Image 1 (cartoon, rainbow, N blue to C red):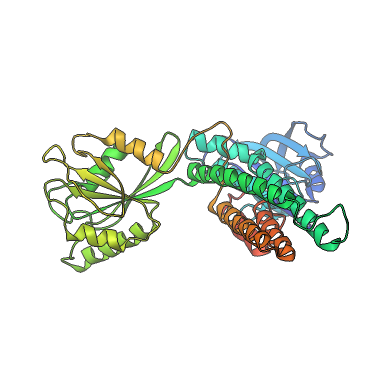
Image 2 (cartoon, rainbow, N blue to C red):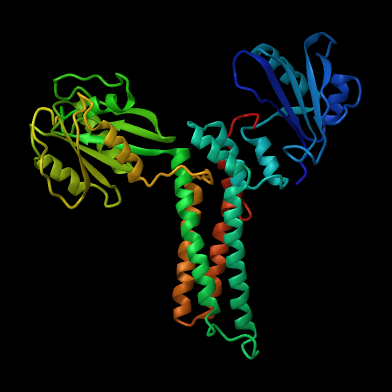
Length: 447
């Protein structure tokens, strides 16, 4: 898809630096180069140049590198102006590029043009943003794997398997009298369905791992006032993040911290103690605490071994959404024996002393293993959007299996078509314009 206009943006981070880069892409690039360089540029060659303004006054000196279409990141004519990395110089160079025919790029517009020009698919484009925002070494490696096409190859293979089966079923429907096509009765459809289901399961597991590495998991610390939530937050982060006192209700608002556990981002949310509020501020803190608990990937319910397990904890467990797993954390075990608590919502129990550090290492291991996190060489990054599309496609495949058992060949084919369409949303083979706008608007300007 050829663009009708030319875009330009500062491609390096804001602030001062040794080098700053202006990236320009579009049909006007050759004319912009001619105006800046005084001649045509040799492709993929570093030209040393004076960058002048419209009055022939020197703005900066640096390198000009030209990448002619289609051999560029966007698939269009692209030029990079590499100058000194001062914010004033960068703004002047960008303004000069716009004077010569470009316009300021929107966030993610370079990557969007690369996608529209088939230089990369949508999952690879999203991996660029994931690579830039990676919070750990493992997340960066996984994002690079996705950028190189590891995730897309899995999705394409799934599409091929679904397409082959759909073609087989439709042939059985269209040619029921042909001797070489037994209408759904020779076991071939069931065999291919089983292969698809197995590959779906492995891909879903790998994608969930990729989402964990990129987005991390959210763990909410919940419990009554003064059970040690803030002390545990400080113990996990290794910093005095939260104020710790013997006064109940010290934490009045939600506190958020992020740490890395073996390469996995962990978002820890410390909440106000759950009790009958004594004032309006505390009541709002408790309301926010309950909201965070409902959104959590896992809840660590802290209890004080001296205070015991009471009605407040039971009410909290009973009110939790069924899909939120709970770990009971017996705190202050240096002062009293661990509590023996039984409740159907409790998945596991750990005994710690946040103040003395006892059991913290075991808690860290529990948080990693509870989410099934494994950093492997073939890991790739993924987003919740990808998981949703995979899950939707999986449901359609399951529907195809049910229709096969019912002998409804036309409905088997329809379920497979819908599965194919859901998978296409991941790579952008099937996608709405509003989804593209939402995805690329989260990118950096210049990418």
